[in-house]
Image (cartoon, rainbow, N blue to C red; front, side, top):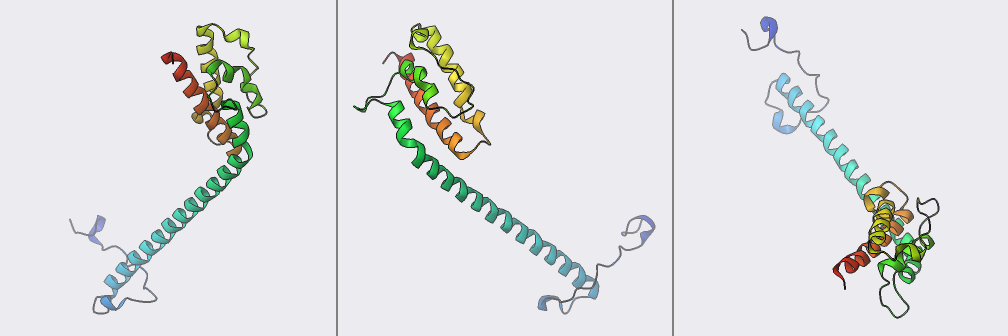
Length: 168
């Protein structure tokens, strides 16, 4: 049992480095090569991590810009849907019966006439159906406009539903 593994032969030396740091000048050629190889690997890994962080930051900045554009485009329309001109929030029935007017094209939702949601149990049913369409988890990976609209609708119907079930 030698220290070099099978047969006792030492591992092959790392390739001779082109440059050697000053702190390694008094070390053997083998140690210089091994340490420099490791330092170079660490530098490459660090550069790769920095590039990943820069890419993530750039993507986050772009998402923020896209969200700001979506907000500028849709905020007034969604606010008008969510509340009366007086500023009072619309109730869950009003939101559900007009939801089709603020959803994006291709959303899996059909218009709900007001008379269909007069019963409290039907309100819950259509609230859950609406959540299935606009919940943030159901709208991951979609465009920033759709994600913004879905998020705002979800907030509005969730708030209205909570008010509805609390009897306020």
